[in-house]
Length: 242
Image (cartoon, rainbow, N blue to C red; front, side, top):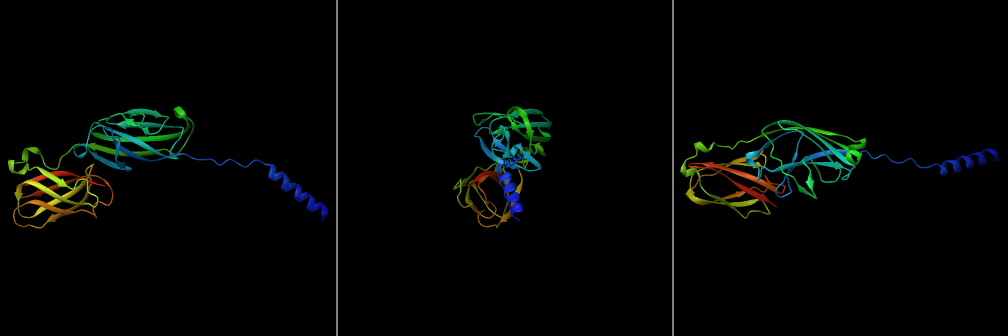
């Protein structure tokens, strides 16, 4: 019995001296973000299959950032193909498809067409070391306004102004340069043209102020576009939610 106990104690002592196995951290590209290269602000997260309408963006100077887990990796290698192509290796965050200078994103105006984008993280700089989990998305770039300019009459080019803008609660008053009357249809879209909501404002006497409560339709802060259509009215205004 004493021998067995001594043997067990010896085994425990030897096990305690063994070095613990190092935990292996696997890096991954988790998402892509479309960036305004003029302001260096995020426009939206690009989905696995997405569309970008240049006509509805605040700028055509764009870039795309790869978001990683962990937030800092050795490097990220981009491969863009389609209507335009780019091979880029980024070793310092932010990891941008068309690079940056100390966080100031370089501008890229994408040609209209379809694209495939893959980004792969690596454990070392310059695309060296072990590769992590890559991410691939497809997206389409187009430029289209809701109503051709040639179809707009003089009365349709009303000047619009939204206030407060930005709005803290999603409630706006739209001021028109000329009175309108009757029912007015509206559509609320994201910066890339995806429709979030649509509805109709009840008709009434001629007015130059329209009240809109978009609190439910705008749960998150960002830049949006409100399209208004009615009798002798077809216009859009940019609204910002804090």
